[in-house]
Length: 402
Image (cartoon, rainbow, N blue to C red; front, side):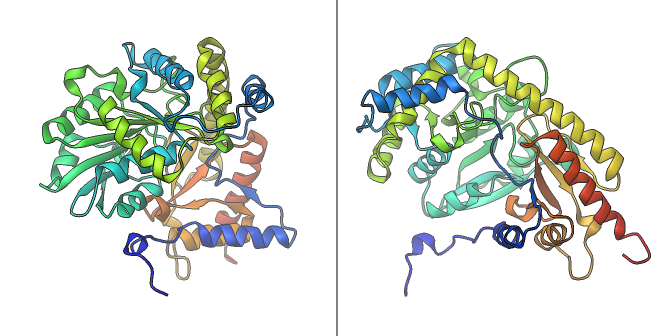
């Protein structure tokens, strides 16, 4: 069978081998601890869930406008105003089925054959694939590892060409947990503006922030207008309200571009699920209650982060890692464990899964084969048990029998 050129460059998931092995071991009765999860382990707050249920009961089960119900878009604009500290035009908000759809809309609308799109690396695994689906060329670009891979103007300038049309940036980062300061964001935004490059800023983890007492990580929306060229902000309810399965994400940009994004979505999926929109409306319409919920969750993630730092230092001192300032991931360097037969991150994750029963995500999925990603979106008790298992197996490598 012949397949469309649209999917000819798609790569299979780098995590598939580990995932398949985990399922087999579970079926055999093994107690697998999964540290690969990309979602909060908390339940959706009851008051948000109840709004979704009430939406179903009251008949909110029909089509809505493609971009989302106006009340939700206005509530999201109000939420973004609390971040930006300035007015936000609600007509620039397009609600979709998760932040992933918002990202795809942006990539497919803005880029095409012959274009190059810079992708901050290590990157979330779907960024390059979305760019490739638009038949553009993803160009990974990584900053200095000693700076937690954060990009600078010099890093971007070194890879920019006359074909460069976009830059995808994630802060707080999946997979590293690194966070750009406002001044660092300003430097990058001003560079993109000078080059007439569209900045796609994925801020889905903004509310999970450990840098200081502020309730969210720095955002491009906080930059002065003169520092911003064309941009698309990506965000959603998934991470901050533990609503991953509700599938509510959104983009925010200038109204003219927002209409183009909505036009594409109208031919792909139409509106996001109506009951989910009603739940999200409740979440974004009650700022004080929402802030309380997100701060409580972020505080628990911070506590877990601190415990993992302690455990890594005690149990696995031979492995270096990036201490996250946001999100809920550790990016751990593991190439010191490579050896004959286990010479890349996928093989290492499979070996660790077989030997310790702990599932991690190989770093090759994020563009750096020297690392693995570990999620701390699980209880402290499970995290400690998992790391002790891994330490025991890793320690065996140095023993005479290992």
